[in-house]
Length: 95
Image (cartoon, rainbow, N blue to C red; front, side, top):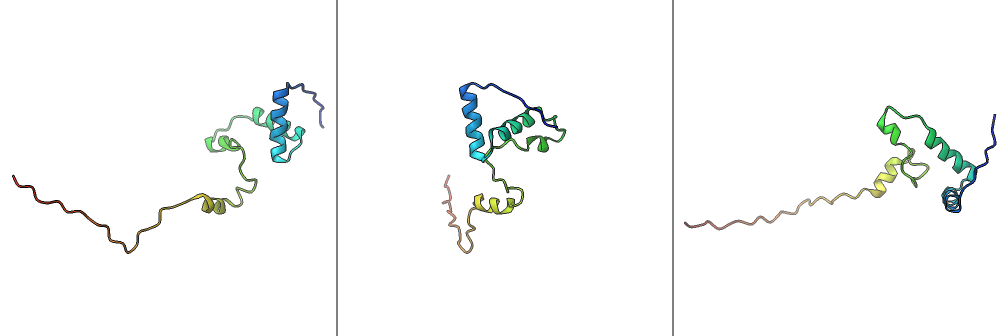
């Protein structure tokens, strides 16, 4: 069963919701439902699960292609194979 709900928003809230929905390709109704669900979701006992959904703008297929996205973003220092590091030697101190 569905229920109709009429909500009045000031101009800035309306624009924010509209822009947020448009950026995701959602309707205003979908965006409002998502916001309501996020605000009324019961607290999680697992902190990792509680953190899910906190970061906006992640790719929608992140869970399926996490390794690919990590490879794209992770930059490691190149190994210095075969290069001898130059060590400085100190002169003996006379006392």
